Structure formats: structure tokens, C-alpha cells
Length: 243
Image 1 (tube, rainbow, N blue to C red):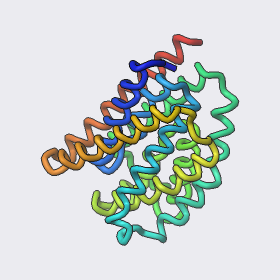
Image 2: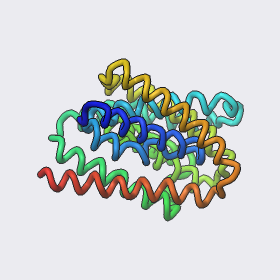
Image 3: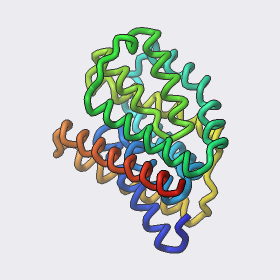
Image 4: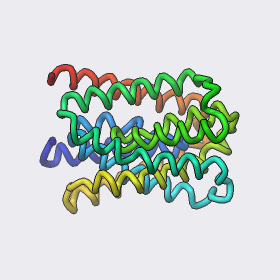
């Protein structure tokens, strides 16, 4: 872990960027922030912080859109996620740090590429598709802090619009991150760092909301996924270097 004011500034900057892109596009905090948080804090603490921050952002973001949540899709998604979260935590605690960095980097990289391509998978439709996406998302969220891509792929295959996707993704984010925090625990950052994280989340939210009306959706989404891809590749590189 990087200590002192340098680490505090880096941590605040990562959270600020992740919060900004989350409010800008409705997704992306974990994809953008997790690789950097893992490199800065280590796999366990980085994932735990991502779970806490992403869950808080989703809770605030869902306040105005909870009426558009689709229970028929969300219930199987969330139940399946709850079942696989403990498995993700177990895997995280068993692997040595270099292998964990390598696994997380690969997961983020593959997830970003799949969402970029908008992969169509017939199995990710209907109730069975919701269960499969939820199970994959729960495992990935507790193991690597990135549970959103399977839900994004489910939404693509279900033909959801962005307006339909965002509140449902926020609802899923609240639930799966709550389970992940219970399973992974809360990171030990200290009062000053928690204050910096909270301030960065607030600032990122204000910036993201301000940019949302001025930035074309496709461009913003491409930016998020490009940052995620770069971060995933960096995590893979550090994992390989440490082996």
C-alpha cells in the first residue's frame, strides 16, 4: 500500500474518476477503479473498498428511478448473486496476491471486451439467463469487484434500452455490493482516508452529472470501457511481473 499524502491523493483521484464515470454512464465505477485500487491497496482491500463505494453510489443513484426496476428480472438475478458471492470471497482468500492480480486483470479485461462488442448469447435470455448472469456477477463482484458486465450482457440480450437498464443496474448494484461487503468485510483505511473517499465520491458525482447532458452516450461508454481495458491490462502485467 502506498502511504502518506501521495497514497491519499492517488486514492481520492481513483475514487473521483470512478464516481464520475458511474454518474456519467450509469455504470463503470468498478471497471475503472478496481484495477487501480487493487494496485494501490492490494487485492483484498481494493475489492472491499470498491464494493463499499459502488454500493453507496448505486443506492443514491437509484433514489429517482426505483419505480422502473423490473422485479421479474431482478429477483432471480439477485438471488443467484447472493448464492455465488461467498464462493468469490473464498477464491480471493485462497490465491496468492500475484495470481489474484492476474485473475482480476483478466476478468476486467475480458468483461470490458465482451461489453464493448455487445456479445449476443441466446442463453442469457429469460429467467435462466437472469440466473446465469446473476450467478456470474455475484462471483465476479466479491472476487474482483466487477459484477456489472454479466448484467450488462443480460440487458443487451434482453433488448433493454439505456433508460430501462440504468435503474435496474443500480438496484442490482445495491444488492450485490451489500452481500459482497458482508462477505468481504470493510477495508481498514482510517478516518482521514474515509473522509477523502467520501469527498471524492461527492465531487465525482457532481462532475459526472454535470457532464452527462453534454457527452454523447456512446462516447462516454467507450471512454469507460477503454479505461477499464487499460487498467485490466496493467493489473495483468503487475501480476505476471510478481510471479
